[in-house]
Length: 399
Image (spheres, rainbow, N blue to C red):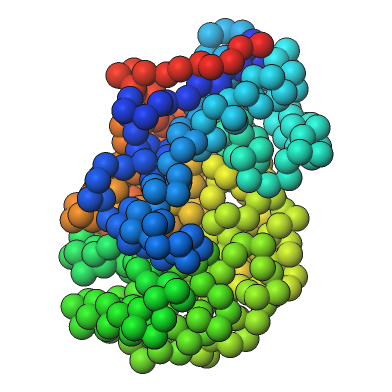
């Protein structure tokens, strides 16, 4: 049995505003970017926070960078969101469960991080931090073994990934070869019937531009209530809406259960971007809240937890299409039959060309060509990307 080196040190850094931006904290964009332009949110009830998501602080955390160094100098790393609060947790709490241990003890490491923080964690920021550590572990394991993460997950079940695009211009996404386009919903319940009418008109316009054979979906980003979401779904049905995503609060499992019953036959209800761990997704699935789950591997607990979530979904015939997380989800999706396609976030400000999702933080990040990505683009050790040395890291805490 090969003797792999043990973990020597865990480091948690952040990228401060003005020193890279974007990247894992993809909402941290400049003025005029589609991702921050009058998108419906649960804060839309307050006029002063309706125009821009950054106005209510969507970008305050910044990027968390976790580096795990082995005794032989090999370093695995990952990026996610969480910023300084998450860095504190990694350095001051979670590092004790890693240093001096084999990185291949990832199941025990995950278990200890989760249950040691259960009294103040369970979801949100704490699980973001755990996810960052877990992804860095998988990157380190791949580098030590000299193989890509997807090999360690069982190997590819298809030769390429195919993508739908999330952005403001599905019509352009179709021209770029994507299989569908998911738009941010612009008008929420506070804007009444006039806002609902504008939403439907926007969908109708995109349907006329994209034709009948192209998927169109709404990303509602937790902005709606069951009544409004139901009305929106039925109003959009004549225009071939494929799914309505994250329509209501992620804590309202009962609302999702009702919404799934309310929508027109054939329309999918999807959610899970802001859900965490096998227990949260178990609620969604056992209560029959949705047709398709969308865990973010950088937020739900990392690869180690995503495997458990996916197995539960597979046993129920539910698709798993991870929320856009670049290479961290690509290596997973390519290995799962119940993950038949992937999401690509259009990070170009006008959604008019393909740009790396986690730019400028990652070097070597693969992007779709004609809406597809061949598996050979993932054939590098670990997740196959490197940290951009020109993006300055700050390590606010040590241990």
